[in-house]
Length: 206
Image (cartoon, rainbow, N blue to C red; front, top):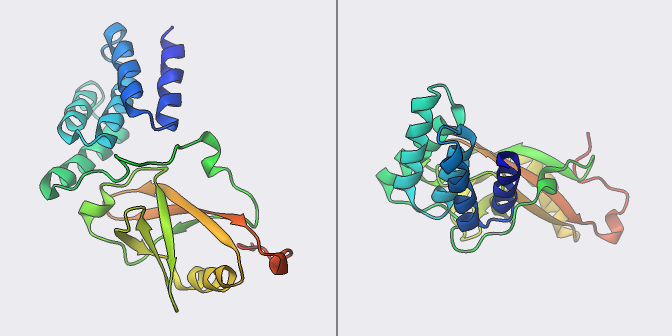
């Protein structure tokens, strides 16, 4: 029963149905109050809905049970930065569903990239794995922003130069947050359309 509820909670989160995710995780906690996985999932859902204090409270409860729980530690750091700066989590109003296949790698078509010249802690703390982001090419660089166009960081120059060339010839790309801490961000870029003239040109050759 608990395993089935846990899977349902994960599915709800993957579909960004945060209210349902909270409800299922709370049902799990009625049966197993010290279930740290359920507490962490509930904390993330509350954070996604903008209830930072509740997310922080649940993460602290996790650390009382498991002082070395890295997921709870990261959530508390995010909550602290958000509470200090008054920044709501991005995507709480309009967010694309996150599917399990979102990080599926395809040789030549996908790449994980660490951003440079990243924004401040309050911006990075609001990001979550799976959040959709925008790639914004200019003449010599590619900036990465939230869907709401808040600056996150930039692609390294070599990758930016290549993407500017490929986008200029008709390729299209989607990107999502892969990992985010208060100091660094990695994004997952996927080629979603290849221009006919680039049919045999890999976006990300090895």
